[in-house]
Picture 1 (cartoon, rainbow, N blue to C red):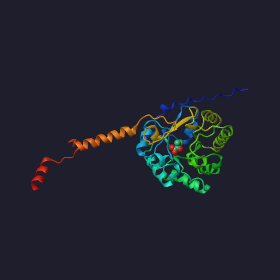
Picture 2: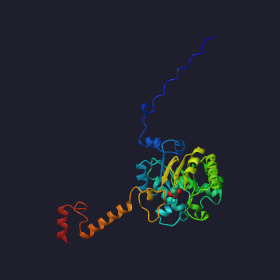
Picture 3: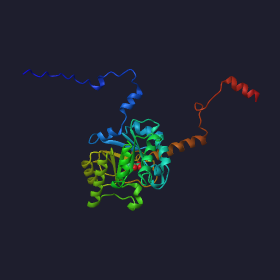
Picture 4: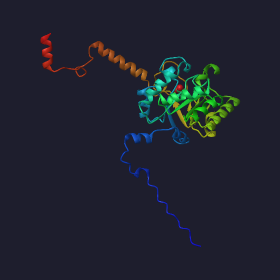
Length: 309
Ligand code: KIV
């Protein structure tokens, strides 16, 4: 029998050695390096996923430059930017407006728009149309919505419209009245099993990640082990696949109570108040503006202007 010829498979060229085509530019590099929903899903179990909120262009630029993987335009907009009491007080128009202000900066991070209360609770049709507005008008790459199996028909319909969905389980602030306040969820065996079942149902539906908020560490770890989508914790202990915090909490830009899980890395309220007060001081002393901070006209023009006067 004749031996079967062995086909030599050429060694793959390492990515860095592949010459870039002529048309390749900065935009193409940006597109290649951008985070996407499949990249987030594939990041499970790897280096921790870095997610943070942002609500406008300056905050989006800051978190993107700091290395965010995901920017959430959270409905916490209602509290930390618009000064309202709960997240129930923000609607679709405001959420789209702020999502646009983030995506206009073209961040490397993947931008997720947070669906506000009642935008995905009435009908499946409403839900898909509202989710689509985050993509078409807001420029986001995905939407997040709160709730478990109860919301599955909505989640499935949004996924069916090719819009990636991020789940949100545990202490879901839009349910504040139903929960009777902001309380840690899943502390008893039955409640913990329900949360696990919700996470499994969302995972099977195909969400690309799930935020776990305000749940005990052991439950968050169990859910993280049991599902294939990455978990992103906030008040859920260190074993999630990633962590998320609210921009204003981390930077000390909030007023009043901060939750136990917040670690504040700066006090920008103090820094900003001192800066503004210093400027007011300079204004009152007549030390602002200086000559360098003032526009001048040529001497010839000055002389002619003043002699005419
Ligand atoms: O709106 C928000 O900021 C959120 C995060 C707390 C996950 O939903």
